Every structure is written in C-alpha cells, then in structure tokens.
Amino acid sequence: MRNTSTIVVVLTFSILANYARAEKPNVILILADDMGAHDLGCTGSTFYETPRLDRLASEGMQFTQAYAACPVCSPTRAALMTGRYPARVKITDYIPGARIGKLLPAEYLHQLPHEETTVAEAVKQPGYKTGMYGKWHLGGDGYLPDSQGFDEADSGENGRGFAGVNRADPVTEKALAFLDRNKDQPFFLYLPHNLVHTPLLGKDSLLPKFEAKAAALPERTEAERFRPERERQDRRVQDHAVYAAMMADIDAQVGRVLDKLDELKLADNTLVIFTSDNGGLSTSEGSPTSNAPLRAGKGWVYEGGIRVPLIVRWPSVVKPGSTSNVPVISTDYFPTILAAIGVPSNPEWHMDGLSLLPLLKQSGELTARPLYWHYPHYGNQGGIPGGAVREGNWKLIEFFEDDHVELYNLAEDPVEAVDLAAKEPDRAARLRQQLHDWRQSVDAKMPSLNPNYTGKTEVPGHPERPNRRKSRQK
Image 1 (cartoon, rainbow, N blue to C red):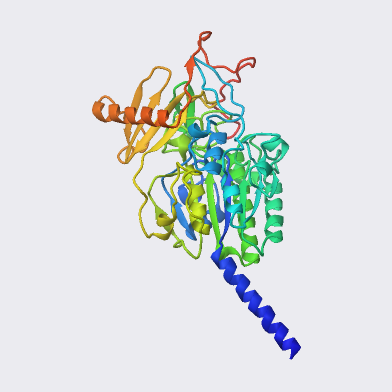
Image 2 (image 1 turned 120 degrees about the vertical axis):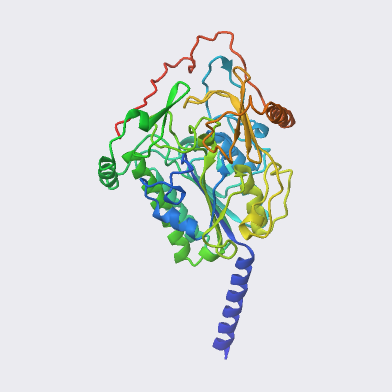
C-alpha cells in the first residue's frame, strides 16, 4: 500500500510539474553575426545550404521584412538586450569603432550601462534561469553578461566570443550542457554566434563540397558579380565557397540545439527566435556574400545593411509554415519574450519595441509605427554617417556629410534604385522632419565637422587597408 501511495504522489508531482512548465515556456534566442537577409535557402539562396534553418522556418513563422536596429553589430545587440533604439542607449557603432572622414563621428558608449534593464534581468523576476554563450560585444571587464542578468555565461575573451575555424563549436557545446542542467525549470538561453563574421574560415570537412559547387557555376564577368556603391564594390552573386562552408557550419550548430530540445522533450514548449545583428558583408573584407536584390550590405543604411532573416518557432502557438510581411525590428524581441512568458509589458524597459505575439498567434495586427535608424559613423564597409526612417512603404535616408536625402517606395522599388526625393518633395520634407523630431526625442548624438579632414576616410594612427573587391573565391 505504501508503494502504491508513493507512486501516486510521484505521478501527481510529475503532472503538476509538467503543468507548471506548460505555463512557462522556455525561450532560446539565437543571433547570427553578419548573416544577410537572403543567405538562407528559405529566403532565396541557391548556393548556400541551410537545411536545418529551412526546416525551422517550415515549422514556424518567417518574417520577410525583419530589420536590425543598426547596420553594424554592437548597437543592434544593445537594442536586442534593452528593447530600446541604439540612439537612446547611446551605443551607435561597433565597439570600438574609430573611423573619421569629413565628419568626426558622434561620441558613443563602449559598454552597455548597468542602469539599462536587459531582457535577461526581466525574465529572472518570474524565476527563469538565464544563460548566454557566444559573442557579447557590449563591453568588457565589469560589463560582461554576468553583470547584465545572466546566471551562466561565457563570452570568450573580454566579451568578443571565440576565435578560430571551430569558433561555433564551444557555443553549441556550452548551450547543450546548459539545456541538460536546466531541463526541469524554465530558462532563457541567448546564443550570439561569431559566425558568419570574418575571419573567413571554413572547416576542412565542409570546404571541398562548396569549392566544387562554386567551380561548377557559370562564368560571370566582374560587372555581373559586382556593382559600384560609392567608392566600394557591392557583391551581387553568392558564390563564395568559404562563406558557404561557414553558413553550413552555423546551420548545423543550430540543428544540434534543436535536436537537444527534441531529446529532452522540450521542443513543444520552447519559443525559438533566430535572427542576425545586421545585413550581410558585401562591400569589404573579401565581400563574401551578396544581399541581392537588396542594395549594399553591412555598414550601410540601405536595405542590404539592415534587412535580416527572422524565424520564430513556437509549436504550441505559431502555425507551421506561416509568414509575416509586417516590418519588425530588433527592439521587438524583448517585449515579445515578456508577453510569451506572461510578464506584463513595461515600456520603461523596452520603450521602443512592440510585442510580436499578435502576429505570431495570427490574432491581430501591430500598432502602425515608423521605424528609425541612426548611424552617425563611417562604416568599415564604406557606409557614411546618416539616418533613415521607414513609414509604411516609404523610406527616407538622410546623409550627414552634405545633408542630402534619398526617398524610396519599397513596395515598388525594394532594391532602392529610383530616388524619388525630387519627384516627391513634400513627402521627403515631411519624413525628414519626422526623422529630426525622433532624433531629438531620443537625444541622438550627431557627428561634427572634422577641422583636419585629409580628403579621405581613415582610422587615426592606422594605415588604411585596401578595399579588396576580389577574393580568392569566385
């Protein structure tokens, strides 16, 4: 009789434990580094191979107009962690950027202030275990993830992630161990990979396949493979074997995490978000990928620099194979995670983001809103200081060197080929004023004239590396 009672008690506690877990979904946020909007098979690539991410998209919702909060890494990571625009957080360039030109770039913070409430800190309040493994890039000693709400973290040397051709492996190994340790309690796991950022290093086991695939492609002229973008050349064809191997690597790493969720029987109750910190690298440092048909790439406020992949899987909530064409941005993940785990919205924390839950549930629409970008810096990739606003299908870009603006109708011209600023002066003036008003509202820092301008963009004290239009890959 005692044995029977024991069994009943154990079963009762097991049922209650499973019920409690069902009320608190787990969350995994995976961030790729420099992955372009069209680098996945499910987003249009025919050269790279990403079967696990394609499968993830088939099991969840794919966002076709997802944006990073900035065309470079650290600002987007700050926005993702805080739900606030980079201009508001005062991290507007990668840490530590220093390029100067006709303008002296705006001053910015080189660490995420402790005063900011991160999504990790917010989810700890209802009892979530928090872990972070990979590239933090929001400050070094004293400002690492363990000071920003993460119970367990390893972000490599001074928060910059891991190095070498196998740099994705420790991220995954640490993540799998975290899942094993915390399978019986709700958790938030943040995995910001170093891939597919430079250096361009592909695993020996993956390279031969893509070298052969590249060699089999039709011959193309330089004019077909690259297009001028100011002083740079923008790659228009995906044919870089090393980059393809790196894409295959991160795809497999994501697959290992998803397999672990299946093994632990946690997949149905886990919200998985996969995205990137900015667009693909297409105009410098080997120009390994193409964001075509989008214009330019990392470091530019054109669509190629800020459009990113976004896949969300949550089996109990999100319809498999669904898509959303609503423009969304990095600041939205914080309030989305809070809504998913049942924590009330707190605009003081994530004042620039909206919960995507109505879209994920297909139960409603987001409040109409403009989206903003502020990049008062010179990008390593050739981009110049500027800002942008998107309202509906209209996007205005303002360039700070000469104050000129460009206006595009993204519905009719997603490649930003036809500047309508002269044809639509009233619309351009209204959006420009709207952008100025927003900058004032967030106390955005602006660049200033460089009194010692030499006629070229440079890093003080460092010789410029030549722009390598061609790489050793086709």
